[in-house]
Length: 149
Picture (cartoon, one colour):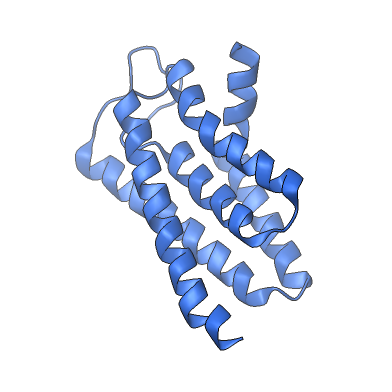
């Protein structure tokens, strides 16, 4: 179980996440999905900014024994997974990618608490922020881009 939880959390670590985000944005750009690439990039950067701002404002410590440094509330992994995989789920027609995205969103919160990196409330905060930014991003995309297409 430990290995599965570590594998679920690994893509959310700072360097792998930023590399994955950059590669996906470049791929979308090259596939002539420039507007969605922009939405994807801006939404993800907005989520990172909001979470990091709140972490510093609230300054809630992580559980004792956490390996990661910095404050715990809200969970960056959770908020970023909801936004990243949520946008992919809404955008793609690939069923396997949709299933993977749902799996990642559902398990990231469990993994962060299981690994002792966050309290449950940190993860709930991450889900609230992630789903809020996801909803606002998709709403604006649907309203201002899809309706005009």
